[in-house]
Length: 248
Figure 1 (tube, rainbow, N blue to C red):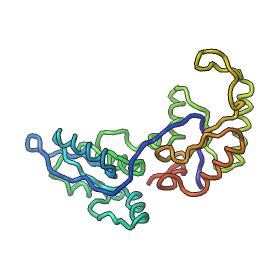
Figure 2: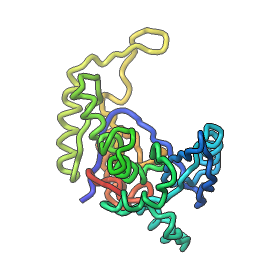
Figure 3: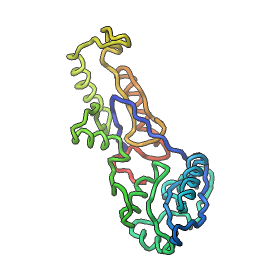
Figure 4: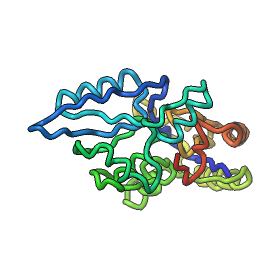
């Protein structure tokens, strides 16, 4: 079942997956010891090419691979099958896969796409590389906000809705709370002015996605319901990112 993330702030995640290309692997050595960085989903000409250039300048080669989800997406979009040698290792096969690069020192793994984040974390843990470990809070906006709340940071009000009935109940409670708040807020000159929207504003967004795709700023219950219905329809942003524990 898809899950919808109702929040009251606008968060933007930017990633690029416009065209398929693999970063060239050119061996660079430092003190006769090759070093390498694994880069998942290196699709963007600007980001990937500049990252590769910087790495080479600092003595690192790039091992470019593609996440399973993006392999499937590219094949379904235009029949562009990714060669097997560029596929990311399967779960449990990371160390065996890394033996192919035993002549180098793999120092890090990074993902350029949102789709590759979970895979990069898995490889990082399996190869004991620097990083945050497997951490769904870094790629799920709802869990991210909850983690901030647990850390004592100020966060937005949010609700992870599985259906419209539960989302509607959340809105009633939210807007009832707002009705008890001061209806006047400072304008850009510092003077008090009436709050617009009568306290019935709401952001509707998926828990995952890129470039603000599927993000709607709504006023009133009808607009919220329309956005909610749209997100419960086709998958958002390259896949079913509405699932709480989605791991491409």
